[in-house]
Length: 164
Image (cartoon, rainbow, N blue to C red; front, side):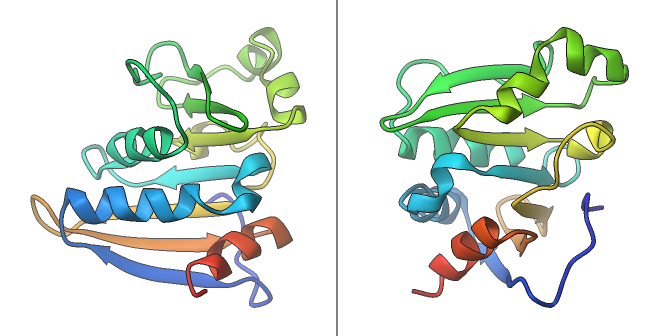
């Protein structure tokens, strides 16, 4: 489930990733969009749908070097892209709203940079509205059905950038 109500004023996009090369190509196209430098992306999908794999491809496309760890236990992993900071959140184990304040997440969301969150529904009460929600559904071992929904003007710019 997405963390906001879709508005007909904002565009959506449906794509199919046939394999991991398609995932990587999509992440590269997303990384090339200027509006990405200061947005909040949410990733939705079951365990094993490919959310973390997609984030790894996105971070590589943004110039992140070195090991890219999943933030499952740390909740957030900061990264420095070529042009802007990126915070990768995994709210799977998030269950105490006080952790939001204690960990300084409010300050992160108030600062410039890309924020990407897996399992955002676990923190929906404390996070801002997503600029773009990306839902990933496994069709089979390698194929994924993907839906992007914009919820803000910045998100609309990103989704429309795939049509350009």
